[in-house]
Length: 154
Image 1 (cartoon, rainbow, N blue to C red):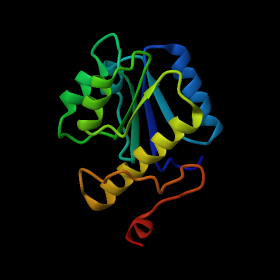
Image 2: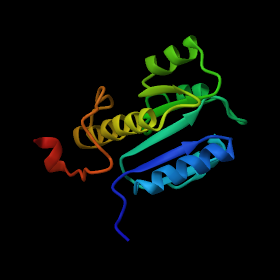
Image 3: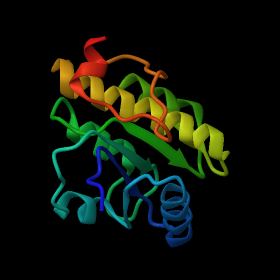
Image 4: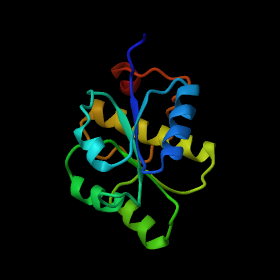
């Protein structure tokens, strides 16, 4: 087995959404782990890899937006929000707090993958540059790229 170079975490209390995302990412060769709650995610031992966190807004233990606020300036993977209850104030709050994207369910596969690509790119740049904010990066394609420090320096 080839070691993972990045990982996608999914927190959603809808088992069907978790299964669908797990199957999608597996079909693309992307490592992923799904959780039904924030508590499960927090308890999971996370490898030191670039990562993306797909986070549902409405969760049983804490809202995704409240969890994002709790994370604050502490290191965490870049967040892509997904929700079945999208509204403008929530999306603005999420993006202002640093989320990569805010997708309303049902979202398209290309929109999800573009957001995940941007989040992983942001995480990789953060890892190699030490910067907490790597901006809006859409230069990384998870399906084809293998990153190293050399790629970032170029």
